[in-house]
Image (cartoon, rainbow, N blue to C red; front, side, top):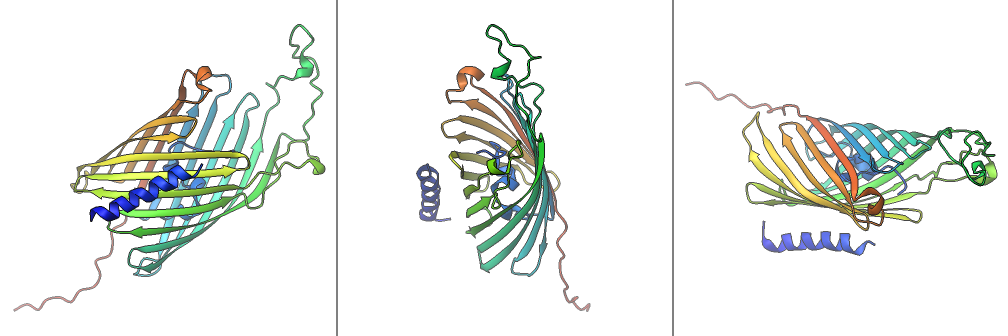
Length: 338
C-alpha cells in the first residue's frame, strides 16, 4: 500500500482520538465486547458463527470490588454475491459492584444489515432491543441513622424503605457504521450508536414523581487495520462514550505477528497496550490459534484512586471461537478426455 494513504489513515485515527474530549457495563478490551460498542457488530467478521466471552474483576484491594461477565453469540446470512448480509446476535451481560451488590443483568438481541455500495465500501445499519434487570441488596448497607454518636449499631432501624430491590425494564439501541477496505488486511472503519433510546426508569423507591431515568449513552468508534509487510498488522482502535455527565475515552494499539500460517496450525501473536484517559492504562497480550482467540489485559490505575488500590485495577480476559464453514467451489465444466 502507498505511504501517503497510510499517513492519512493514521492522521484520521489520531484526530478522532485526540479531539474527542459511563454508567453502563464497560470493558477495557472494548474491541472484544461487541454489544456495548454498536448493534452493527453482529455478523461483522470472517466466518459463519462466533461465540465470545468476557470477564473482568476489578478493585479487589478495596472493599467495593467490581465484577463483570458477558457471553455473546452472533451469526450472519449472506444475501448476495456482492457481499450484502444480515447479521444477528444474542448476548447476556452481568455486572455487580459495591456493598449493596448493585447488579445489572441484561439479555441483548442485535439485528443489522450490511449493504455493499461498491468495491471496498460497506455501510451497516443495526438495531438492538434488550431486556434488563437492575437489583440491589440492602443487607450490608450502613446508614447515617444507625450511628448512635459513638458507635455503629446494625440493629438500629435505618429509616430507609425500598419499594423494590429489583425491576425489569425494556430498552432499545441503534447504530450505523461505514467501512472502507483498501486490501484484505488494510481497512478503515467509523461507527456511531445511541443506547437507551427509551431511557427506562431505574428508581428503587417506586414513586412515580421521582423517576430516575437511565440516560442515553452515545458512542463513537474508530478503527484502523494496517497490513505492514507479510508478517505484521497494526491495529488501532478508539472509543468515546458519553452518558449524562460521564465520559469515557479509550484507545488501544495492537501488533499482530503472523507466526505460522500453515493450514490447521495457524498462529498469530497479539501484543500492545490500551489507555483509558484520566484513569488507567492496560497492557494487552493474546494469541489467535486457528479459530480461537484469547486475550488478557491488566488495568494499572493512574487516577487519584490509585492511592486506595496501590495502582492495581484488575485483570480482564476475552475468549472467542469462530466457526468457519467450507466455501462452495461452484460448478465447473469438466474437461473432455482425449
